[in-house]
Image 1 (cartoon, rainbow, N blue to C red):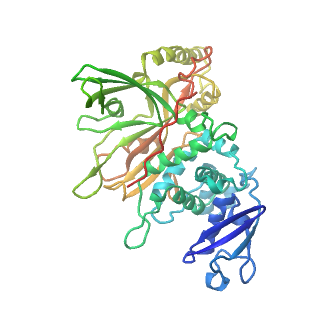
Image 2: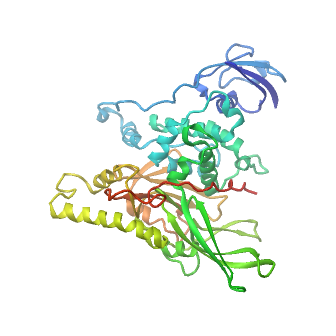
Image 3: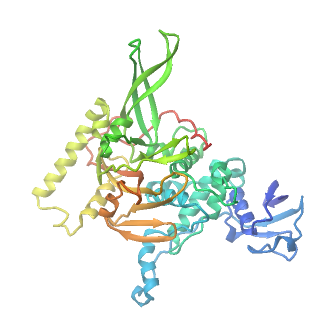
Length: 493
């Protein structure tokens, strides 16, 4: 390991570490995280032999401690998808024809060594078009990301999503991986044998959303309360806490970025686990007793987001083997989730009009003979038109399943993760690292568990929107959030 000084435009980066046991492409990805200039646009000078090649032998470059390096290149715009797909697909060889047909759904991600946890997380979040749009608008001032690891990770996510959009072939997410490990070193853990260890996909999901939340703020103001992640994924909760010993009661408000489906011997369906997850005991100081006491907690949703994440709590720490063991119990989940019963009375009243309007619109279309079939639309195309009502259209409290992250194996830190993502045309696509396959909805709903096959770990639901029925109540069911931000997710031990 040596340290070098890198000059780029008017910026000078001192003490940039270079691992000479890794190829120069890794160093170029470090420069990408510092400057936002993708490796393919970089011209790195200051070494023997001229420009630094991706596969150069470090020993032949003359690199040494304190070397001064100059990089040319501009961050510019990220790659854009081609305007037109290739004509005459039927003239391509069969394997290329299949790839061209799947390319409209994005591309696979290469496994860079136990990185399926990261790949599956990225594919699920890539399926959230609103998040892609927010990232496409994100801009970081040149050089500013050097001191802001959250902005660096947001920029790496933006670049990777652009590559997934533009490429019909598997993408190697090396730059993203290096930036993720720099921001969250726990994802760089290595086994005694020297290889990188498998990680928990939920921890990757939560930590990535935290970094994006800190970066995707209004007008680029880091101190602004308005965050795209809050607007898209934030669930506002109100909890009532009661102490059986003293009769004391307290109320708390919070913002979460998903709900938990707790799994017990009595839980067979998602709704049962969600009810259990909204009840939890907490230890807090009792004013009457002057010591810690147990308070029984019960939470209700006070504001729903456009995208609702649910974690199937399948893993727990098993002390005798010192790892996260897995609950294999079968827990079914629906293609359409109604969150109405988990909402506060106030929110249920706010949802009444949009739900009635949605039902009235459906009935009116049926009576008038203007059903989706009559209009020549598939059911999925009709739903897609409904989703296009705009971000201000009120939510009904009903959600459509649009993404599933599954795990196969007996421990969160081993096994294999894959992503199942619903596309705009209603197709379900399996992203298994660099392998991409079209699957059926019944294949997805069968991922309920009960054996050693893939089972749902994270569920992603997209909100149903109703025809406008007047202005929604502020902060209720409209996807607008303004709560205080939660603490940063804890690093993995």
